[in-house]
Length: 545
Image (cartoon, rainbow, N blue to C red; front, side, top):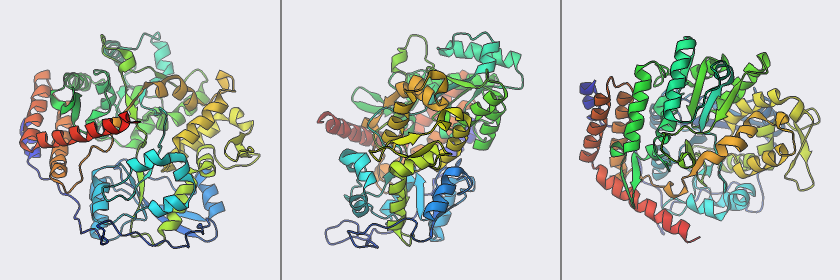
């Protein structure tokens, strides 16, 4: 195994070919000309609008547009037709193919990181500044602070944020199968030792059930949450391959909490307590297990997305069954109030970009701006408006939906809508959505509250760490640090996969030590110094507020 691991370290990673960015005399990216006069907004619905969309995640498959109630309403009422582009199982390879063929989609949705930055540097993304000033919603709901944090080095904004916020939010954490938990006596389930004992009981009593479901481990799902259990104030450092030590960022491979978590994960895998295909399984396979109740404990960065529908299915069969969230698991001796299975930041999750291949970028921005506003948010979250729906227009403020009796009488139907429409929310307005549903849910008796909102208020929102100081650390791809980052990322992915399946503790630690050594030889320290500087700059900005 180590031989193969060493070989994988030597494989060079291929990147996206870049081309010079068109510049003006002042040295900034040229503004894309607006399609309409500055005082005239694009009118959605006046004509057919066809948009191609690509979600840059190997696990993501866009639901068929128009097949669910929310997107069907948008299609029928605004004449918007969106065609998803299949990722074909490999996001990076698919993106390279599209660039090589010079056939980029109108919208690319993905993480604020390496691949999108390559597109921006290559001049393949449309600057959004003029549209932001012209259209009302993003500027109003995001505010100056968030928009300024999105500015690229050239001073322009290319990213439309998803789930931007000014309050804690997030769904990361642990979900437990109620039936199995009840039948095993509802034991205390707080520490890593208690989790380990519980998973062994599940294995002994339910041979056809996955004791601990990670989701797609190659994306960090499940195993990142277990890492959080071994380290206080853990702010998703796996995305940077570094942790804080005093006022510096240092190698994650030498972090005691990370090393302990790697040993714990490998132990669970060896003993058959984690699904054997955690690294290679698909999102659909995970959903199928959850829907059939064949999972005892599930952890990920967003279990709500899949469990919402699975819970409704199990409850339909037996009202006593379903899934519940538990407080974050932690290693005994640590402060549970400092354990964060997930994080949030004011910029939110990921971003939508409009490529220069788009024939009418203003029309696309107008759609995104509508989606992030009150009406678009309400349609996507609570389905089509009307007396037979879950909401029927707005109150006098033009912002607050008037929810109908169906909201409480048919919660399963609403969960089904949200389970699908949630996959189509690309520019989510966290403040609007969370505040609106929270205010309404508080007026309802506990047994009438929406399942997801209930657990967000009870568990997940309170257990997410504020990672705002750690945003925008990633170097630009064509910089020296960016090239180092690319090499270090390849080492990281190989190391984590091999460590997960390590046969002994000694082997796991040897893999981590080798990854550290190879990373340092690839210039890791220069990269660590760079992200340390960026982190300290963020702290200065935040401390000035």
